[in-house]
Amino acid sequence: MSAAHFDVIVIGAGHAGLEAALASARLGHRVLVLTINLENICLMPCNPSIGGSAKGHLVREIDALGGEMGRTIDRTLLQIRTLNRKKGPAIQALRAQADKILYQVEMKKVLEKELRIYLRQGVVSEILEHNCAAVGVKTLTGQTYHSKAVIVTTGTFLNGRCHIGQTILKAGRIGEPPSHHLAENLRSFGIKRSRLKTGTPPRILSSSIDYKELETQEGETPPPHFSFLTDSVSVKQVPCHLTQTTERTREMVLSNFHLSPLYSGQIKGVGPRYCPSIEDKFQKFPEKKSHLLYLEPESRFNQEVYLQGFSTSLPHDLQVRLVHTLPGLGNAKVLRPGYAVEYDSFNPVQLFPSLESKVLENLFFAGQINGTSGYEEAAGQGIVAGINCSRKLYGLAPIAIRRENSYIGVMIQDLVTRGTEEPYRMFSSLVEHRTYIRHDNADARLTPLSFEIGLASPERYKRLEEKRKSIEKLHACLKSNKVNHKALCDSPILTSSFSEKKSLSELLRRPEINLFSLRGIRDDLDNLLDDFPHNVRKEAEIEIKYEGYIRKQREVLKRREDLSALGIPSNFDYNTIPALSFEGREKLCKIRPVDVAQASIIAGVRQSDLALLVSYLRRENAV
Image (cartoon, rainbow, N blue to C red; front, side):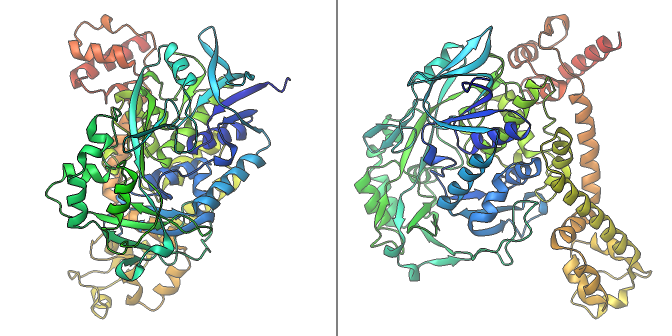
């Protein structure tokens, strides 16, 4: 085989590209990864963190499928915490501060060590096409590489423009050239483009910060971890700090709106609704006099501190003066100014749920090019695109990542069914069945699926089986151990009395009782519970406390799975169902859902439309 021929070509080596390349390679394919700069593989150009509310679920799911993000952040984190600890388990998630330098180095090593991956530096200018299918790429320097499939993960580089005040730099991010030719090439195939915008805050020199004025935020002890393969996190954690905007900050921002590219009309792209710039915060929330900001270290190897919550594209000198209005930062030295970046994204409605293009066969898209924001959203799409690309080449059906079993499935179905007019961010509120689809049970939901297709390792699957056996053993212990009310009288537990003995499982269903509080009611319970690791105790307790809710959600999910089994042919003629509403028919013809489950979330498709569609499909299948 010629060196210029590969099974899969991945354009871009960010978080989406890396997971896509690894998945395809680990499933047996020769993969070429082409990126503008090999030194910037998995760079963290924006926030130096992994996880967060809902995003932590995505990281756990990527890990459960056999991806790399969770394992690498566990090895390279600076600090880690569980968010929403005072709330229910459905919305609890992990967030880690990353050592961005070490994270990048480790991810590059992972790619370099993978035997079926070939790394090359180059700017792709053209997708090669034959018979309406992608068959390779061409670079700006004239190199031609042939392949059976192509995965595009270009991030913010397509027609990228960076803004700092009135200064406009043509770049995918500061210091790196954009890609114009590929953007126009994709448009030439009939792939619809839109313009989006994201941004980043200034970086501050750590030694110039007066930390005595700031509130300290320590990491969680003992530190939790993302990957189901990580036994423990041994790194020494680094504190973060909190500050906030002042009235002077507010006055300066409001009096300088005319200098903001966001409000002068200079920026045309739509920015993220839920990650607003400091200009947006004071403009859109005038009643709020102050905004909380976080000072987050970027690495153990430098003194750069990320000013979380202060994203801006105001002029450089004004950014410096604004930083000096913040408590603890009166003498701060700004190492890098914040900036906004505009870029091309392409309409994800033109993708199948497998993330393959409907326009050009064997062309897949993943990451910010699909209109998402965030490393985690990108990596989640990347691993799915890599898996499905590989399976397509083997003549196999896409992996069953759906709304019913994952946050990744919700995200992808939202994108390919509804599209997005602004950068899409994952939220727990978007997940209808989040009591069942939690971050702690991502392995139980997705690892069997990944193991079945050959991606999740035997070690990962063995760990899952051992964990499940331990949970079942703990369930049995809690059911067999019974106590009377007198045993609780001598403990701090305040709960209503009961006459007959109750099992520990029954007591755990009471909201005021948890496994930790049960420890003191009998001498042998401490030893019994200590026989089980923390993750087993936690998951067993959740299953007991929320048993009724989880059972009901599983019943609903089973019904949705039945709808997913009702596939809709790609050439289906909706005019053969005359009773469909006009809007329903119009939307179904536009989106072309692959099954009834996808059709059910299309805005404008009524329940009566779905009933008619289900009836027709079942009748046709029965013939």
